[in-house]
Length: 331
Image 1: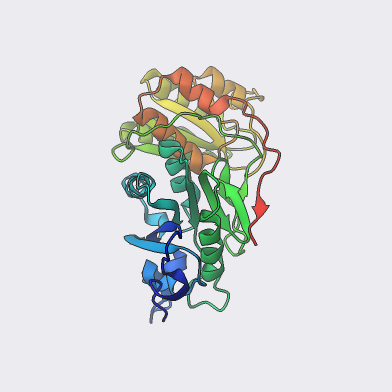
Image 2 (image 1 turned 90 degrees about the vertical axis):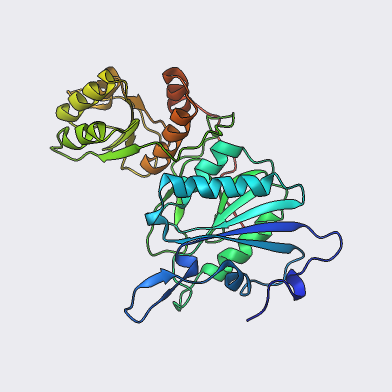
């Protein structure tokens, strides 16, 4: 196995330096004797599979977790590590190796907290390192190349595509092109939200036909500071859930309504007792673009920074400029 500190990956005079943060995920996973894939490869071992690059690669072994197991504290730890690398004037860019289940959440947190002036690139894999379809080495090579470009901000490089962090969601569990954007819009948050989110509880409550307010009431009882409703359609639910939203709002808890529908802009149009219009009247904020996972991260960041409800509403409901060039190929 090639040592990434040697050969083409070694730094020569004048070459840029990239920080590589390893956090686990499928890209670092291989199957055990029981047939289950678990993170086991280090960042150094993964970089040994990358092609030579005109850069020095500095690896930090941060976590070894499946991203479905990450807590807000784990995501904050990753964001803090990215921030430390960005503050180092020797670092030209940062690559984060991350599991796909929560990649869009951590990526958005990093964007919100740091508004990076350098490239920060998240990547991972859909198939384990010992799977015949393994896509990790290709994604890693593409991510390293992307991090060498003068493109500030957080992006995902995955499946030969470059995707800005804002509005991302995972749309496939078995395709190398795992991610899409809900719509091509610019972010509505333009100032950094640096306060840590580690100690907050922000829950996601799923709506379905016939759902009542039990789960939302339980989140309130558990001490949630904010709640995201994963609603139906353009952001609709039931009269019973609307009543639970009103109860939560009466206790000062911020409720944001998103949707389980993956693509398109959302609007509080429908009435009938449980529609988005009724939720708005009950005091909920209607997410225009972000789906539940990223809506939770944005709500947590806004609450952690003590933002007033008017600013929270603008962040979710504001109309951002259209992005003329959304995702682009990286290979």
